[in-house]
Structure formats: C-alpha cells, structure tokens
Length: 146
Image 1 (tube, rainbow, N blue to C red):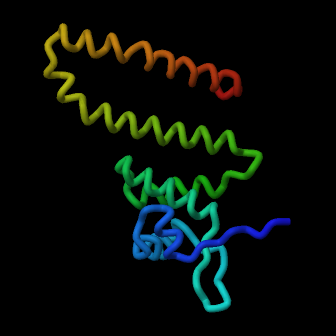
Image 2: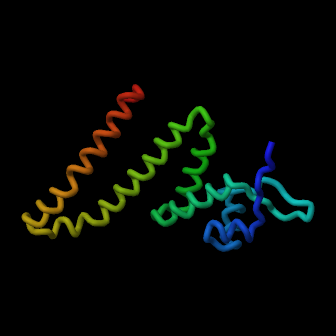
Image 3: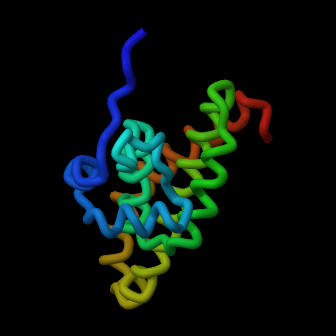
C-alpha cells in the first residue's frame, strides 16, 4: 500500500496558486482542513485538499461568495463514492447558475441590439444551447428523475 503524499502549507499554496494566508483563512472557515499534523506540528494537506482548494478558487472566479462556496462544499462532503453522479449533477447545477448570472449581466446589452444584430447572435447561440438542454433532459429522463 502506497503512502499518501501530504503537503505543507507553502507547497499547497504554490500548487494551488493562492497565498498561505488564504489557506489559513479557508482552514479557519472550515472550507478545507489539514489531513494531519507532522511531528513538528505543521499542518499537512492531501491531494483531495488541493482539489477542493482548486474548486474554491474556480468558484471565486465564477463570482460565488465564500458563504455560497461553503454551502456548496458542505454538499460535496455528503457525496459518497456511490453518489458520484450526484456530485456531477451538483457541479452542473452550479455551472448552470453561473451561466444564468452571466446571461443576466449581458441582458442589457442584448436589449440594445438592433433586430438584425440580435437575430445573428441568437442564430449562433441557439443550436448549441438547444443541444445542451436536450442532452440534460435526456440525462434526467434516463435517470428517472423527470
């Protein structure tokens, strides 16, 4: 059985592209937690923590608040290995919420377009959007969700 690789805060900081202070803050908030402590009492973090940290960074870029991120991460903690599909659906839901936010941000611009300009924009957009929605509906129907 192989030993799990653990990282000190400085190593984790460099790999995730955030400051050690940010890691301290996220740890104090309960967003991430050390795997264990070293003999010299250093906090040691696992690859799973690195992945969680990368998700947090991405959610911050997607304009989620830390409270929203904390609630989302709490939901992810509940996901067991049998429920990986639920985790993926949760990620899709978060992504769709982000897309809704972005659409809301560009709505004023879209309203100012001339009819011909709007027609051109939607002509390019609608096929991909329709295909995505159709794929989600098929997925939901296959799973007996709808």
